[in-house]
Image (cartoon, rainbow, N blue to C red; front, side, top):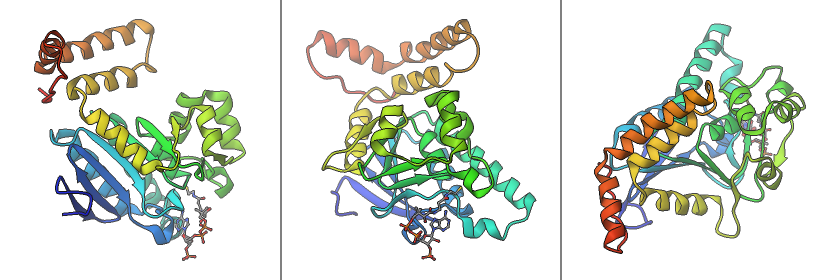
Length: 270
Ligand code: COA
């Protein structure tokens, strides 16, 4: 049991500690001595957690953060990278794609609590999340070209979808680091936390989302995630298919009953 209440429990995987509070799961990259840079094992842990959370009805929202106060995540472990062959690096890039994809496509909302620097793969990880909140002292950037490489965990694609090609080019080509407030003004960060801190804010938002209707949340995420692909008509067809999932759910009937009975709905994820 953790000190955060009888409703919570903790466990640890390689590079990641996991806290479950009610229906919210918090994944903390636990490599503070390396500013939470992820090695291969840490990425594998995150991928495994995303796979498990997707099908676990007890998990309704996820928060990802980093240990300590200095870093959310300093990106790929550059010490590990130094000793790798080109083929081993390619295999790592494949792993990043699969893991970020699992987080991105998770049927539950995922919130990045950016509690310090999020650089390179650290920002790419945050961009795979649905929502991002940051501490005021945090800064973010896709700084890979300063290392002679380019973003390799989806950053060129996901940042461009968030800020548009023109701004993405400026940020990536100049390897710019921006403050949390600048990131918020660009739409990269949804909210900058006040005194409560990014982790507490993210947990609060996740708890709020965990009380919402899980099937409706998943359907909305799938419809929004598909919006960037194809024509408007393709998107409207997708929205209709996603709506169908919510339409057929018992939670939708419960919401209508609760409205008629003037009481809050109790959503069961069915
Ligand atoms: N991979 C491996 N180790 C890393 C790391 C990374 N990406 N980022 C930081 N570390 C390690 C440092 O090597 C150092 O280890 P040491 O104590 O053995 O020397 C430790 O973390 C602390 O780093 P330090 O630079 O002293 O801390 P800081 O708080 O002053 O600065 C950063 C933190 C993250 C701003 C800085 O370390 C940095 O710029 N790291 C590189 C980030 C980057 O370019 N990421 C993109 C990768 S794709």
